[in-house]
Image 1 (cartoon, one colour):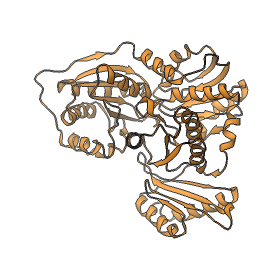
Image 2 (image 1 turned 180 degrees about the horizontal axis):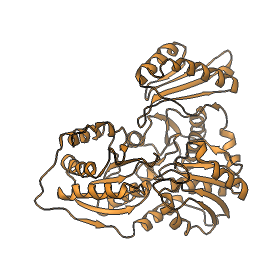
Image 3 (image 1 turned 90 degrees about the vertical axis):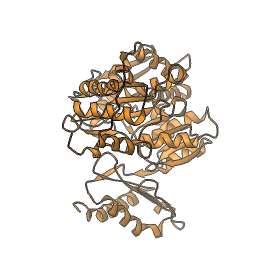
Image 4 (image 1 turned 60 degrees about the vertical axis):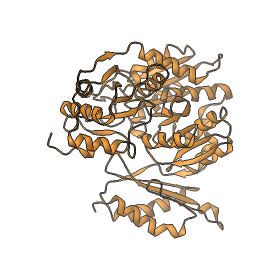
Length: 467
């Protein structure tokens, strides 16, 4: 393989065009490199429904077994199911590594692989990704005396469902709820039917539950409003208590209230943190660097402590482990639970939302309303190559005026006006780790300040577009 594919080794996972970049040859060589670098004896492998996933899974396993590695194959699964089965195995027969074939929320022309250690710590930037990339580029492999075996794992889905229900701690007298659920033709569609069988109080209105890696109905990305239009319409038309939307591998989950209003990911982080802190008084919650002031305020009000985190699951899980955080969330709608090995579990997030609605007797809009304190731009993307230069220039222009500065991920600058607090605002600008984009988030107390400051920043960054 003469082509330089080092660029597909990202900060959080491996991802690229498939089959142009990620194909059978790539997958087998990666399996050989994984064996050579990590020297695992036993590896868990799962995959999503993308059209190239079966080939990548098969050839990955071939590379591993040729190197003497034993593989346990769970086949089609969601990423949370994959993570949590790896975690569950720790107390039984642990895996040394797990590999999930998926490109998450990316369109169907992409595929990828997420790699985790047996303790569920991801392989990512600063944690073996660079070394694995170099081993792959060199073509490292080991000669095994005997090939490994590849066996299927029976009952995997039932084990995962049991874990989710046990973790949710639902009241025995759950009221009846009607919920529209959009699986986006992704892996949630293979998991949810078994979960819903266990929830007789939940009337689910399923949308696009048939897994299809071509995503024939819409992109499986709940962060984009255009992907939520049909779900919003269903919630309104059927008078649902809420709507739920999953991404392609079901590690991200978005929520729509009973009025058809999407709930931003940082406010859902605050919402779930409030619920989780009831069982963990004084616990630490990680909030990604792009999150609203409302999220950190909500954590404090619930008796918790907040800390900013970088963006990306591999980085957040490592920080959760280092800080002992009980929960973490991103505006991209990943929600992480300490009790589940610091991993995402979108199914648990859905049940916790319903649990809080049940125990309070309030609608989702009523529960979210106290968090609607600020005006937020959402993430604004700029296609430019001079990302580092743009971030540095913005920082130099605004730092002197800032009351708070963080360079944890890009730069976040906050501005507090003591004479006129209505002028308070902040922004974060950072380079995407998965796409050739610069991402900007702006927040203010009023629409007028938000509009003015956003226009000001857009004009500044326009000079770097195409640079």
